[in-house]
Length: 280
Length: 310
Image (tube, rainbow over all chains, first blue to last red; front, side):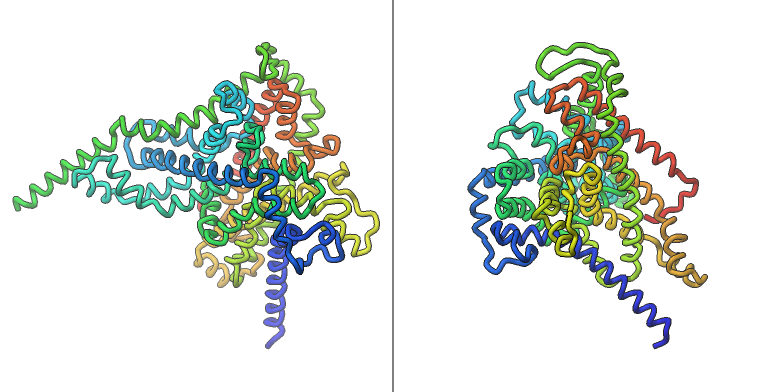
C-alpha cells in the first residue's frame, strides 16, 4: 500500500465517521424520547438518563391512552387524516385529468391559479377563515379542518400528479374511445386505475401533512371532542407538566404512526418530498 | 384495400369523436369545479378579506369601523412588530446559511458512499414528525435542571448551565437548533437527488482533465444544480418567514418577546387580544413580504445559461 492510498482510505474513514455521527444526532433525541416514555421521574432524572430501562414501564402508555382524552384525539387524527387525504386525492385527480388530457381554453390559467395558491402563507388566511367558519357555524366542527386541509394540500398534490398524467400515452384513450367508451368511463375504469403509484406517493405525503397539522386545529377547534393529536398532546402536556414518563408516552403515541409509515413506505415518502419541492 | 380504407375512416372518425369528447365543456366543468371552488373559498377569498379587514377596526364580533390605512401606519411604528420581523429575518438568514452545510453533506453522500440511501433516509426522520412533538421533545432537552443538554454539560464539568429558553440572548439560537435538526434530511434529500442527476459523462470528462474531488464538487457539480439551489434558497427563506408552530409551542415568543416572529406576533394579536383589524394588517403584510422575498431571490439568482441537470 503506498502512502496515497493510505491517505485516501483514512479520508474515507473520516467521511464515514462524520456521516455516521450525523445519523446518530438525527436519531438520538428520538431514542431518548423512547427511553423516557418507559420510565418514571426517578429513573429519568437518575444516574443514567439515556439508558434503556431494565423494566420498561409500558403502563405509562396505558395510563395516558385512557386518561386525558388521548384515545379520542388519536381516533380524530386518524379519521380526519384519512378523509381529508381521500378528498384531496379525488379532487386533485379529476382536476389534473381535465388540465392535462382535455382540451379547453383557460386550462393554463386554471393550473396557474392552483399553483399560485402554494405561495400563500396559511397565516394570511387564518382570520377570514375563522370568521367565515364562525358565520357558517363550523367553528369547533371537523368540517372546518377537512376543508382547510383539502384546499391547502391540493396544489402540491396536483403538482406531483401532473408529470404522471402528461406521460400517459394518447393511444390508451384513443383505443377506449374507439371501443365506444365515454370520457367518464375511460377516466374511472382505465385512467384512474393506472395512477396507483402517483396516488400512493401523494397519498402518503398528504397523510403526513394532515397528521402533523397544528395551526388550523389550534384555531378552529375548541372542544376536546374534535381535537386531533397535535393540539390534544399540547393540552395534555400543559396539565401533566411534571410527569415526564406520561409526556414521553403521549409524544410516542403521536409519532408512532408516522414512524411505522416510514418503515414501510420510505421510498414513496422520499419520492413525494423530492417531487413536491423541486418542481415548484 | 377496401378494408384498409374503411379502417382509416373509422380511425379518423374516432379521432374526431375523441377531440369532441375531450373538449366536452360539461365534463371539464364538473372535473375542475371542486378544486377551483375549494381553493377560491379557502385560499383566495380569504386573501382579499385579509386585505379588507386590515383597513378596519374590528374585534371579530362588533361592527367593523373603517380606518383607511391607519393600521398600516401603526404597523410602521410598531416596535414589537419590527422586532419580530427582525427575528424572522435572522431565522431566514440562518436557514439559508445552513443550506451550505446541507450541500456539503450531500456532496459527500453522493460521491460513491456505501449506504448513502440508508443514511439519507435516517437523516429524513425528524422532518416527518409534527412540530408540536419536536417542540415538546426539545423543551425536555433544554430543561434547565433535568434536560439532556444541561445534564450532559454538568457531567463534563460545566457549573452554571443556562436556562436556554429563558435567556433572551440565547433563545433564538436555541430554537434554531431543532429547526436545523428537523430540516437537515429534507434539503439533503433534494440536493442528493439533484447531484445524482448530473450525468456520468460530465464527471468522467472532468476526471480525465485532472479535476480534484474538490474542484469537481464546486466548479462542476454545484453550478450544474444551481436551479435546485435557487429553489431551496426560496424554500428556506420563505419557510422561515412564516415559521410558527415550533416557536408557538416552545416559547410562545418569550421571554419578553425575545423569540417572537411575525407569524406568532400576528397570532397573538388576533387570537389573544382579538384585534382582528390590526392582526389582518400584519398578516397581509406578512403575505406581501413572502411574495416580495420570493420574487427578489428569483431575480437576484436569475442566470443566462439554461443548461440544467436536475
